[in-house]
Length: 371
Image (spheres, rainbow, N blue to C red):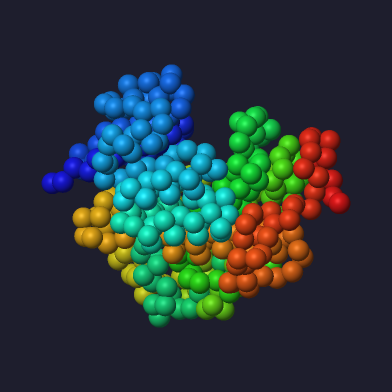
């Protein structure tokens, strides 16, 4: 069995999640190098996870190592340039969300990937649980019928203390609020199941947190199939939950969890008269595989071994990022936005806040105020 060599860039909390997931791959991968500018944190991470080689700079690691996959676990504003540097050397990159701060940034990464031998993938681990994979296959199955409506709620709580980390809550370094950095996982899963979206109308506001970005957004998304979904992204919700609901003609399929799910977190309710066929269709697809980084890492390594593009590809990532940009554009301009409307020349292509959010960018005294 091939053992893949992994390098991790960044040693914060999400890097530890990656390291733990790699160690749970049954010897299929090993961490051979780690990069961080903070020497103490670098040493502690390397000691904890048994990493043999440490680097203070990405370029030094790229000059000294030839890893099979480079995991970018750094803050969002660093992703673009780090990904491009890795891709230019022909490496496969697995990048934490969001992969870039804007559609322009994502296009630059795509250009670097197209120009060389490197491959780029984004971490969207909720796509890879067994139940989600099964539901994707069942969309269009006559036993469930057509998808009609859906709910996608990321209702989380992030207190003021959370935003004392300097890069959080700023358009220039985080790229956005819960729409960009928190709800992205749930509505990426939504899109992976319901397919291409057609139009969105949205609101976004800053009600309570001392940030430049929003702390709440709500959107109504219409899909090419005709299905309509509501999407709420909140950092203000004391009872935290991540909730998705899909109403088909013959069944309701629900998922409630927080940061990851198992088969047991899904509920299927057949419509009257469809109990037998819906139950059979659902139970036949369950594999016992939970969502999470290990599940996606397995899919990435499988793809590399097969000579295929590792998931989630930049094309699939772009669909999710374009919805984010369109939610902000709709919220800040007061208009509905169609898929494909935000392109080069639009301020929302260059920055998620376009020409600026419609609230003061200042301190706590301006929180909750409107222009």
